[in-house]
Length: 290
Image (cartoon, rainbow, N blue to C red):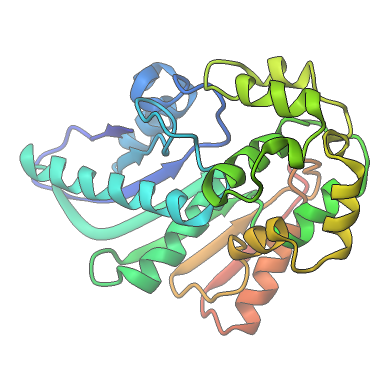
């Protein structure tokens, strides 16, 4: 990842971890582009406001050579936590003082990863990190509900490559089928893994994708998935939902009502669950931001 450190003396600074949106090309991350890339600029901007700002690449991006575990909660969280640990160690080495405040935020996949890290920190590492405030933005937190419904609607989707990215990541992590061709039509089973090698762009993939993403599947697979609540892929998605818990730190969910790719119902469902589960400090901002 990348780390932006303000040039100050004799001050105790807060740590802010910012999680980037979906990236396909492994070199399009802050550790490679530095402060010239979009997310490096975010780090530099936050650094100038007084935050020591960490931007993790995520596993499978940058120098990491595994397949990126896209929208899978545990590796999304651990990559953030490990980067925060490394950031603290680096600050000790260069005599930068950190206070106890920890802020986390991110957009799209980064919103999902932010939520995953927040949950893991409060449940597993409360003695190591104390989150001051969390700002997950426009993430697909309700994978097995809202996002499944979007794909099963059999309607045109603005970024068709989102679906195969998810399928390839879940196949890599869970070994759901013996062969990808058990899920996907032959052309897509053969072609998509080549295009998701970290060196092709979203336009490269969308050029061969149907505008209705679900059409890459065998029809019988769609029927089985639709009718079987115990389908392995459905269960794996459910295991990675991030809506049914209760964050204790101040949490503000941001989501545009006009988001056509990751519907606002993801944040809405999370907010309702959080309130019902007794979360003490949750806010939901969902104006039509465009």
